[in-house]
Length: 460
Image (cartoon, rainbow, N blue to C red; front, top):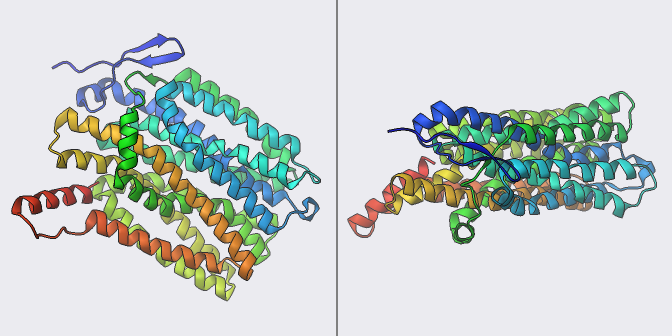
């Protein structure tokens, strides 16, 4: 049997691959893997810069001293609005890949990052109104959409057996844009530079990402918007269950990434430079370990890794509550960094679960071969944007919870108690839906079917 070849042909709007079958092992070894890895590399670059621009205001507020006339609550609200917009735009960004092509949309999405960056460059000075800063932060939210389009695009390039690794690497490489922009800000602050220097560094990098995407990425002709799959994904309870779990992992990661520096400044009186020295560590480690979460999920099952990861997140959060009450900066910072690592691990394992769940559903429905694989790709691709968007809204919830906690009790302790309770809910939901042994009541055929489905879910 001859494997289908990858046919990359010029077409109006860019490079298009006419045939793509990554599940065919011969095709994958001879042609597919090389093309997929090349697209993954430049997808990571664009998404990486997108994350940096999305979280830009988490470091911009460190530059904004008393002369800017903003309260801590004002600053938390600014970063909350960037989080909100970043979550909302993930839905249209998901479907943009099929509408315009993965390569073409990467070019567009990367170029759009120039708008919030140049706008911030123009207005970043004392005397600018709170509303203007708020509007610029909302513009930066477009960087959050890059994740959804990038993940949807890369999901199409890799076979199911490689998705945990590929999606974990793609997301981890993007997530690492958070600590990188924080490290660059640390260098700028340390050199007594202003916020415009930080912005001036990123403007040419955005142009480079767009150009490289145009030169080296591809579109896949067979990837098309499927409104039927989108409607089916919205109606499927697993889409919403995974959205809730993703709030617990990615929502925590992005929310803490935005808020960590402000919490250190507001609760522990750290200077901007002192806060910047440690702010980047948690997001950096959380980003680096995300592919490991995907690999562990490939090997042991995403549900199992996710379950025990929530146990660890709950334990770390409990330590943070104690440290916050005791005002122990060392213990607080250490536990917070551990929590960041666990959010990254959980990001990888939960995203691996998505294609596995819909593949398991296909198996339970009696579908086999390419029919089952096609069903899994349709539903997982359609659900990813929605799950990513809802998960990112967790970051908004975290920032608003911190804002309210500081307004109410003058510290973040109350917010952390709420987060601890939420992780307990995520643990219980993961166990009940994906790992609990089904009841054996009913007919033997029904019990056998439920057991088979539950076993499949445990392996996702």
